[in-house]
Length: 227
Image (cartoon, rainbow, N blue to C red; front, side):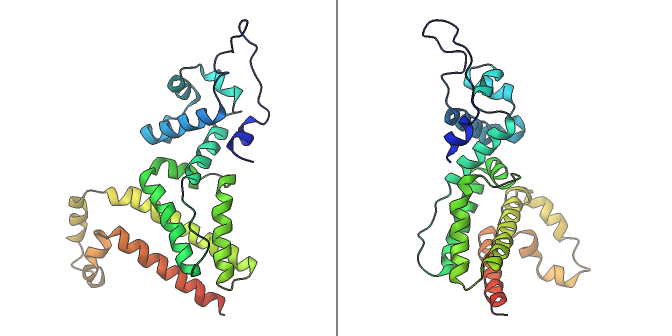
């Protein structure tokens, strides 16, 4: 079921207001509403998305949106679908680690380009259907690593939780001004191990941290499956 199928289920139309004239908002499509919500969240953040505000953006009354979606949560599901559909799916060939790295890099790229929408996509109560190709891709790679189905699921959740946390850390914490980081660094003289790693701890290179953390996880998963 694609976005249109998901969002037209149970859809009702308002009566026409006159011969040949659609009711307000009837000429919209679910896809147009979802894209407008996506763009609104990108521009103003998830908190800005209300039915009234979205109606203003589309030039219709808020009630017209209910012709296409039952509520705001359904619109957020559609936005999550759009976000995840923008993650490129790597070729399903080559070493399993390389395939997983490429998938994670694509998700991180989406997070960096659309940080507000990334939160919507990755924090829904249930994954949208557009996430299924990515889930299948990851499980296939873990299967090629020799993991049984139950272990594949555990590995998938391990990588997903780390990736989501890393992207949120990169989006939020790394925006802290460097001056504040320097203040923290000046307080480490009594903590020798912290002082020795102060630059990496408080002024990290996110690209290096991403690659190192992902390598660490994948090596651990490979060793884990051999037990």
